[in-house]
Amino acid sequence: MSFVAALLVVFACQDVSWGLPRKNVLLLHNLNPDYPAIAQFDQGLLAVLRASDRFDVRVAAEYLNVTAFEALPSYLPETARYLEMKYTHWTPDAVFADRAVTGLYTQYLHGKLKDVPCFIAQDRGGEGSVPGSVFKTISWSTSTADIVKNLVLILTLRPKTRTVLVVLGASEEERRLAGEVAKAAAGLADRVTCVPTSGLSKAALLEQVAAVPADAAILYLRFALDGDGVVHVPAQVVKEITGRAVAPVFVVARHLLGDGVVGGYAASFELFGRRTALWILDALDGREPSGESLTTSVSDFVFDWRALKRFNISESALPPGSHILFHNATLWETYSVYILSGLAVLVAETFLVLGLVLNRLRRRRAEAALAALNATLETRVTQRTRELHEANDQLGEAKEELEALNRNLELLSRTDSLTGLPNRRHAEEMLQDALVRFSRYGQGFAVALADIDYFKQVNDRHGHEAGDALLRDVARVMTKGVRHCDLVARWGGEEFLLLLPGTDLDGAGQLLERIRERLETASLRCGPARASVTATIGAAVVRCGDGVEDVVRRADAAMYRGKERGRNRVVLEETDRPGGPDCPE
Image 1 (cartoon, rainbow, N blue to C red):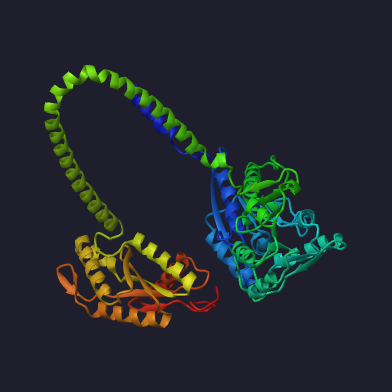
Image 2: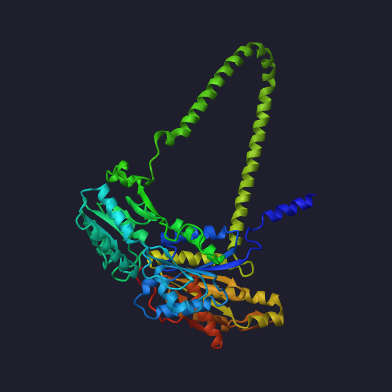
């Protein structure tokens, strides 16, 4: 009986997706998850898809940064070829595409995925929607109606406002929004003047923001690409704007609140992601969307209580149903726990006093017995004190032993047990740290992957013990050939990864060539005898927009080119695109 119960517990704890039909969903985003709107959308969408009891949904996401390469004609076809190759054996059953990615999908990918349902984010008017039964146009972008509601809101909360600075960037989407602003401003031309900022650099934008008088207002729509072609994170731009502005700042996206923004008629991208997931599930089931309408708004009036107080905006003036965030708690809300705790202590003290009074009455009758007990009490206290000291000493020793074990475990978890080098986990952490330094301070670095030539033959001829000994010898030679600031790690099998901080591609090539020559000239153990060993090494340097996997992939590609060219050589990545440590953030 207990065995059957154990089986039931095991099956009850299984993943709910076990046994469900597997479906693949491909997300084609323009911007990356560093943008809070994208992160919130993905969070909402993934939460619903992964909780589905209809399908085992697998999600792949691509962040293509189309707006940053609008002026590069080859970007779209090259990206399409890359996606076709990548998803040859992973066919999506549904696709979601940002508005900026629509051209890529319809021109280059639709032919390959012509029967796959595709949800394309567009403006609410359906303008530019894609014909075809497999396409569903859904609301993502800010519409004229949204802008009008925010302008009317500004005039309602600050009736003396006559000028509104509308913050816009220079991307295709932001140019489209400029047209929506013009439509919205035309209907309110007798009440307010809208001044868009299209085409400015970020520095010029901040100067213009600082010059806006206190009796005006600022409406932030979007600033992802400035007039100089530099890509920016919109949320960071909002933070810098509120730091410079003396006028109130209003927004159209809820995730931008919290850094001094007053509020506005703002969209929740997390809610939009959840609704999109429901529509995708219906499409995977072969049905029309059965949830909320595709045109249902995900926007509402939302405000920051702190900013309302700063600009003397009364809560009574807000539209009905408004949501107020960051509201300061009342005295009771702040100190209720302490007040209740104090009352509890007071009650406890009252009972304690009553108990002391009763004990005092009993004391006279117990004095005789107490005198007898006092004779033995001191001995017992001394004994207990000694036992306590001994226990504390044992506890201290155990704590020191545990800390030493933890330190050893931490070291072992980041060390390759065979070669003594840092392992892949430690290397990935160091690569991520180097990438952060590159992003913040422009400190470039190079990454190299080295593969021992014909290593399998050593294992086949002399056994794995000989192969292990060879790996240790190669690790020793490589470690002696690098600088103190460099990292040599075992990446896997016979592959080693080298992280070279502050090194450009030429410098990396020279250092790696010295290491290759050391290996070739060294007499290393190969079974019962010694022989020279060669390695093929590929190197790449970090570039703007890279993730860890990008620079490692380029180094790996360079290494495989070296294999194809005959092994025993250092091959540098092909530098056919702009970038490097000095490129702008």
